[in-house]
Structure formats: structure tokens, C-alpha cells
Picture 1 (cartoon, rainbow, N blue to C red):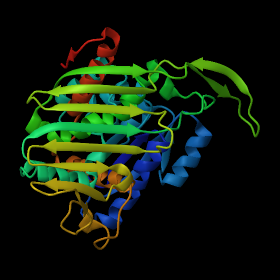
Picture 2: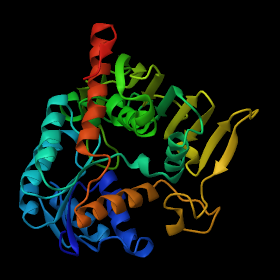
Picture 3: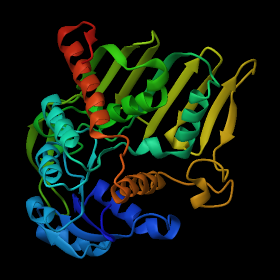
Length: 379
């Protein structure tokens, strides 16, 4: 058991920093049984931007070196770019500080393995932040699968499509550098889909046994713009990751899967969808309609759309009356609730670093399949 309130240190204050800070702020209002927390230290490099973010996000302190924060906090959130996941997370775990780390776990399988091993040696929770596991409709779908409602799992299909890189003059960012990101659409988007499939069907279909994958980069270099109201191009930098991937997978049970992701899918903003087909029925979910699950059972002539907002549905009783939908940001509240409860109670958290590593094994197998032009065994 740890003391309360739990002091929280967060590395990173941009997209994910804002999402998790918002979740921490919402917890006391909607999850009163959650551990009390203090947003203690926000970590970043730009002192001016960091101070502004800390004030907006409700953090009492700032630090420009993550090592300075570890002695001051009970829990460490690693929300930085992929290439800074391993060292701070391992140091925190070695110091006995629980860690929640954004996905993918690391740029390389070797770093992910070191993180997994550090977590196994630590007597504290270590979680990989796959927030889509905490959508009520996904939890409802998992319950149907576990109860045998759709029979034996035969096929899984997943996609994650975005279009923020369609313009070839869109600016270069760290997500386009293999040394910092590890991979492109594969790790950034595909990791979510692979983990969601593992979560939904892993107990029934087993793990992914082998994969056949293809990676594609459409724009080989992108501009870096100068600051200012009318920025000019300072230089062009190479894009060293994939813009899109596709993969076929074979499960240990004999089930099959097809997965794809793209950051060039014109007209798709955040189109994350997964379908599971069984011997007795099927399920379909889309993040763009995250309160709904499409269900087909037995002799049904078509899918029924189930609005997963009843008070008996996972997490829903904490929010609004039936039919009053929740949104994307609520997944982080649920995730933080489960993780911090595990920290306070000395329990375990899923998805763990071991589960994050399992996803990383699949990512690496897809890369190797693309390099070699053949099916690759996972693990």
C-alpha cells in the first residue's frame, strides 16, 4: 500500500500530457473511490512552454530533467517521444516508482525487452497506455466473446486510418524519424490495433503465431519550417519510417487476421475499427462511434447496433444517464482509474509492460517480413 495523496510526475506536456492531465483532474468528481492524487511535477525541456503547461494542467512543480522528478513523486507517467521511453521508465522502476508509459513501449524490441525485464524485477505496477482497452463498448465486446456469444474465433480484422500527412508539405516531426519513433503508422497506429485484438481474442485464439507484412513510405522528405507568422522552409529532412502498413496474421488457434494503418488515408481523421468473426456470430466496433457496438448472433439477418451506455455497462454508471454518450477523453479517465487503483492497492495492471512487449514482437515481425518478403514467426 502506498501513501495518499499519490504524487504524480509526468514527462511530456503536449498531446498525451494534456489527455492524462485532464483525466487526473476528472477522477475525483466521477470516480470518488479513486486514490487521491496530487499533480506534482511536470517534466519537459522548454522552460517557458513547460511553465505555461504546468499552470494550465494544475501541476505545482516543473523540472527539465526527469531524473530530478523521480525522488519527488510516487508515480511516474512517461508520455514523451518513443526514444525517451526506456531510460526514464527503467530508472523509475529500479527506484520502486510505478510507471505508466505511452505506446509503443519503445522504438526497438531490445529496448522494450529491457523495459519488460525491469518491470518484472520491480514490485510495483508498470503499465502500457493502450487506452482503447477502456472503451465501455470494447469491454462489453470482450464479455460477449468470453461468454461464447459468437462461438469459435475465426477471423479478426482491424484498421487505423488517418490523413494528417496527405499534404507532402506537412512539416517534419519526430514521428517521422526511425531513431526516435522506431516505426511510423505501424507503431503509432498499428500498435493500438494489435493490442486491441490481443485483448479481445487472445484468450480464445491464442497469440499471433506468424505474420506477413508490407510497409510503404509515400513521401521521402518533409520540410522544417522557421518560426513566425509567415514561416519559410529552413530545410528538408528525410522520412525514415513507414507512412502505411498492412499485415496478415495467423493465430495459434488457426484463426486468421488482417490489419492495416495509414497516415495517408484521405478523409479519415481517426478511423480505428476492429471486427471479430466467430462460428456463431460477429462483432464490429468503430472508434468514430465509440458508444456503439454492432452485434450479430446466430440466425440474425443483420447486425444489431447496441448503444453501450446502460448503467450496467462497464464504467458507464460513473458518468451520465443511459443514452448520454461519452467521448474519446473518457478512455483516459478509465485507464488512470485502473492504473492508480492498482498502485494504491499494490495490485497488478493490464496492459502490463509484458503485454506491451508482446505487441512490440508483432511490430518487429511485420518489419522483418517486409524486409525479407516472407512470413515471419513471432517471438
